[in-house]
Structure formats: C-alpha cells, structure tokens
Image 1 (cartoon, rainbow, N blue to C red):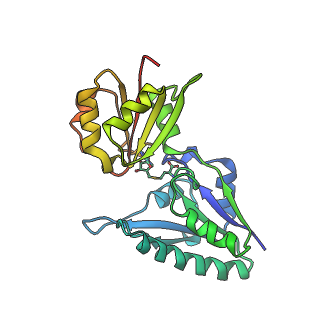
Image 2 (spheres, rainbow, N blue to C red):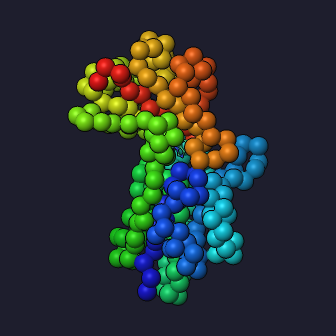
Length: 235
Ligand code: SAH
C-alpha cells in the first residue's frame, strides 16, 4: 500500500516546489486539491494554478470546495469527505496526494486530514515546502532574523502593544493573515515609523507586490494573501 502524501506546493511560483514534491505529484493516481468560491461567484484555486504550470495531468486532479467562512466546522466537513475518499483509494492501492500551498504543516488546516489518517494507522508522509514568509524574505532581500535575534510569527490577531514588546525583546515579527489586524497595523506604522516594515502580497503570482514605504503600506487594505515583516534597525 502507498502512503498518503501531503505535498507542499510552495508559495505560488511553480519552481519553488521541491523535486521530491514534484515527483510525488507526477506519479500520483489522484491528487486532492482545494478550491474556493469568491464572493462574486468565481471558483479559484491557487494550488490548481501551481499544478497547471507544472504540467500535472488534469485527469489526476480532484478538486474539492473549501468553504472560506470563519466557521471551522464547514471546512472540517469538507476535509472529512476528502478523508473518506482517500481511505477508499488507499484500500484500492492507489497513489494519493493531498496538496497545500506553502508548507503543508505551517498554518495549514489540511493537516487535520493528516492527523485523522494517522489516528487510523494509515501511513502518511509530509513533503516539506517553502512557506510564504520565507519566499517573502527572499523577494525583499531580507535577512529575516540574524545572530541572537528571535523570530515571532503571528497568525493575524495582534496589538501595537504586543508588537512593541516583541521589538523590545529583539524579535523580528512576521504577521500572516494580515487582513485580520489591518487597523492595528496601520496604528503601529503611525506610532512607530522608526521600525522597518516590509509588506508582501500574492508572492509568486503575476499580482505579486512588495512595498517597504510606510506611507504606502499604511494606506492599503490588506487582502487574504498578504503578510508583513517588521524589524528594527536597532536590534
Ligand atoms: N501554509 C502556508 C500558510 C497558509 S496560512 C505557508 O506555508 O506559507 C495563509 C496565510 O499565509 C495568508 O493569510 C498570508 O498571510 C500567507 N500567504 C500564503 N501565501 C501567500 C502568498 N503567496 N503571498 C503572500 N502571503 C501569503
């Protein structure tokens, strides 16, 4: 029987998948791939976009809808269906992959399926990938953290006070899911223009954006696929 392989696709640029991940996709009988419905009724899938650019056979890709609502239970129900289908294919000795953007074990809700399979003693494998914040650092030419510095990753909810405290402790900061804390980020830039802010949007796609000008970053509303790196030059 073949293990179920969780393939990390990298941040968006197709060449940033690993060779190991690409081989697993090329050899798969079935690849489960999340897609979402936008508010204006379109169906989008960054994962499918990446695989298309890697020339992965359409016929092996099985898309499933991942509800974007804040209700985690809706997403879990979708994952439960993928889990059931995966089990059937596993028993038929098929090679199954499940894909995730960035790294599949870094703020990746799909890991829920991994844990569920593991609990049933189904063999699973996770192929590492490049998370978006690492690709962001490279795009901006940043040394994200150096020497004695720490790095704190914040998934969305934060306050100016928390950011101040972390900077005092010599921690560089990565804020993901930036759309969840837009006002606090604007306030922080206003109160602390001396910190360096690096804003990234849609890394690895044709709409990629990198800004390090405070005024410009302060004036933006942040989409889901955006992140911010904050550092202090006085570390
Ligand atoms: N597993 C992913 C993280 C998923 S959580 C990883 O390893 O990177 C989703 C958050 O990741 C988004 O809110 C955004 O902050 C960040 N993100 C993912 N892809 C991105 C991209 N291409 N450009 C900018 N931010 C991205």
